[in-house]
Image (cartoon, rainbow, N blue to C red; front, side, top):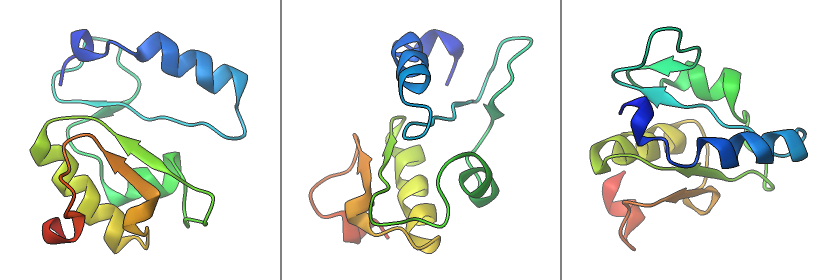
Length: 101
């Protein structure tokens, strides 16, 4: 939710530099610091289409991390954008992903 919550930001940036054709990330914060250049609030379908992968292919994978409510909303959005549940990983999801759709 805040920049201090981003424990893995340097790792993500390193992966993006090493694999620019295969790795993208987009961070959304509720309370960003001054000068924040990524998302604020919620991840919308527009953000996924513009900043991540769209339309999804069999080779695409979306990994999300956040409060359970955020991850639940993201799973629903990805599903409605045509992503198969096998194409995302949610840290908060239980084994019965379809129950959340």
